[in-house]
Image 1 (tube, rainbow, N blue to C red):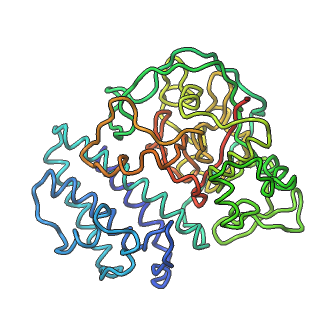
Image 2: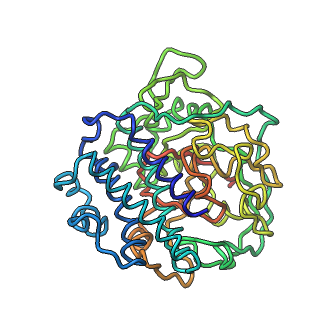
Image 3: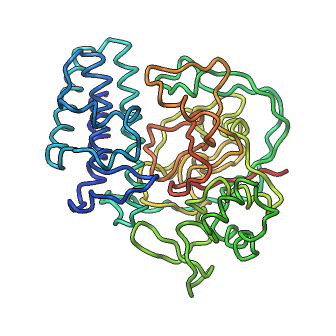
Length: 417
């Protein structure tokens, strides 16, 4: 099982870069991307560090690996000036690391430490794979060559709000949940009032009404930080939109290197938290807190997934590049919660109103740079997008980004005030 998942993760990583020309590996110096050669080398280095070197006691495969790929020690801006190996030796390093890591897993199969660190490197590679998609989108490269499925047959409409009763609920990870990241630890009780959460994410049609009503020019709708960001960046619409003489909404949306007419019932995507906040105020609504989002997804019975505890499939939601892009917000009734809240996993990551804070009793795991440096400055997102590996996410999984980031495949749903 471990070796199959590790091989699958690596195959997907390599698929995201296999079709790129060598000159496309030299990406511009941007704060939201990494050099592709560095990112690939870092994926292999991270896996090598925690398995072959940490567990296996081996010397590094590459003599200068620590000076090249240690993300905790190498500032982001410095990654463009490193004397990195070229494409071919980088891929050879990845091959050697994966073979060694799998061989070690056979030797230490019953070691509890191995299960933890192999969960860590698998999640790390899945997240970096998704980051490679963000990079391709940001640079307007073509979509990667991944086989996709036909969109599902729609079963029903997801409209209105679902009423969630207040009370005491338990959120966070339990000790029997298998591998979890440190920011999910541990389960604790929270008290919430009654709330009503939208059954579907905000659509392009709904968001276009906000744009056309002057939402980006009305300071009253924005937080102080949001207005400062909007004015300094000159933002007037979502990142991937442009005005166009087309039906039905008069906007086009860019998907990698292609422009297409904006589809009204698809979720608005590539929206930052500031934009989501402003829309919610315009609509006389609000974003859910992180606790409310998890409670709506999990219920009192603490389901692992919105629909229950069965592993996600392509019938439950839009994950894992099964469909290759966002789909209609009314699709995937099979993934509904008992209250009919739809697509809480998949399609788009969902901004919440909550800053990224430690849970009670938080302590760092061996990979201490995963959560601790970003606490209090980042905003929590929940769910998962069409680009997220299905094995990575569940109702308790916490994602986090700075609130101005909109290169990621994010959307949002709202709550009644």
